[in-house]
Image 1 (cartoon, helix red, strand yellow):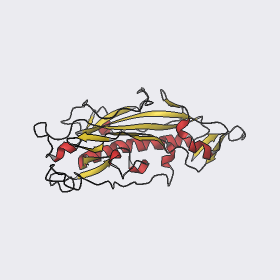
Image 2 (cartoon, rainbow, N blue to C red; image 1 turned 30 degrees about the vertical axis):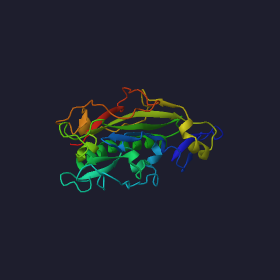
Image 3 (cartoon, rainbow, N blue to C red; image 1 turned 90 degrees about the vertical axis):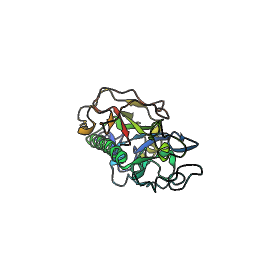
Length: 271
């Protein structure tokens, strides 16, 4: 549950409520990626994720259902295989913003083809963010708080395809898959409104003042970063180089990284 600031209750100035107030807000997608002769797969997506995502019943699934060429239909003048029929790799319609958190699964604007390895590594990063959101939730439940804490999460898809440079072309299936996705995350705090009912707070969560977090407050317990991510610029770390061009842009209100022990980023490569 979340709490709101209410000065009329001196014994508990921040009312408790079992309503979802701050789950996900400011979800946005950046269109489709230009791949050869078509636009296919997501270019970028971002969202601010809040502690109420940890509440029972807050998470959905939004399973990937988007279809079309070259995912499951042949593209005229394109590859002779689809991602579904490819014999060399198992492909996943991977969410940029996880469907459990509210990211869409019925549109390619939030889905991109990732190999099983790439999708598993993205899931490892998402697991770290889940642990952080659980810490946000525990802090929220620990007593009266003047602000909610959450995570601003952004995923950008590589401009370059996964295909070998010498083989990139309209008929190469891997020309329609990104080489990697770049994930950036920031801790954010949203100032709570005063003397506002929970329903009003939930309806206006995207309008309240948002700030990056230089230092976490006393009592906030950050989760440990997974060992595989410590000091890593890419997943997998071996054989990959970070820093390639990406599509889309970070949101205008995406905070600068702070030395707070949480803010960071990593690239998830196909293999």
